[in-house]
Length: 116
Image (cartoon, rainbow, N blue to C red; front, side):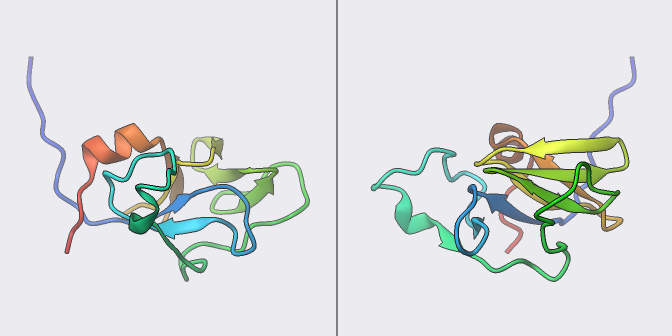
């Protein structure tokens, strides 16, 4: 059977930490654990909503493709495959065509590393 290697691409991503006054988005290393403890707090930097991410809607049922709806501590993200739920600790990725989708922290850490 043929084997394939994923092409190296650089993506933009922020981590969803649950609702807070700044919507709980963070910039941190891919290896940062999902659970926040006193010991690992120094690696977490809260971020404003990036230009590529729409302001999360506060009301509605399902977001359109590229839209984001806040549902308690979760985010619902409209993707090309339907609506996906981002839980606190998940990453929100902007793909190579500008599409948004959530990614579980263990998959993100295994797939991505800092590009800088």
